[in-house]
Image (tube, rainbow, N blue to C red):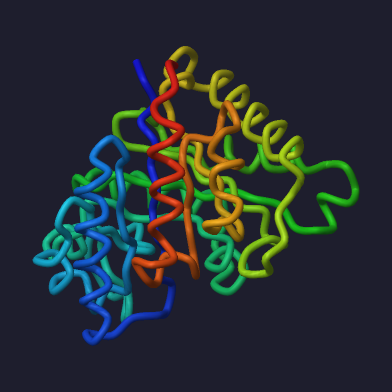
Length: 253
């Protein structure tokens, strides 16, 4: 099985209806690079409108609740997001783990809820700068992955995104050797839990990926795509990342 490159933009708390033209432009970009799977995880307020503008891209959400319904004011269930037009969702992003205090168990529960509603999942893991500087990054992030991994995890519906927390939005990235070492460690951790299926699961890099560094990052053996923040807000900035993925196509699992 080949691991098709997956490049996903995470717009975070950015985007109004006025930005739907960028969604359409990215959808056209995705159609021009059909060998790469391209998506946008948008604010929930844009999902329904963006679904009609997505072109060759998919539309995803940035989070979901672990319950299907109930007294959870301000939250959105996976089924609600799917009904609005999302086909993927992110779970466990470091900003939610930090700002909303989400635990590994919460992340696993959200992933399972998303799957039950028919959504594909990008499960995020990553380390702080203190952990990196202490030399514990691979062990800590591998343990976080295993604790966050839902039952029945499969490459058919789940991808992992490694995001060094200290690199998000800073313009800093780990060395290419450090990225390669982490991605290999995460694949080994997956193999310890799901066996041969780990070879088919896509592991994305997230952390200040941009048009200048994308080709080098995407050329690393176990980097199967990117989870892209600020550089995904416009088609002009996103285009070189998608093109770089097209130049580093599927890797045999």
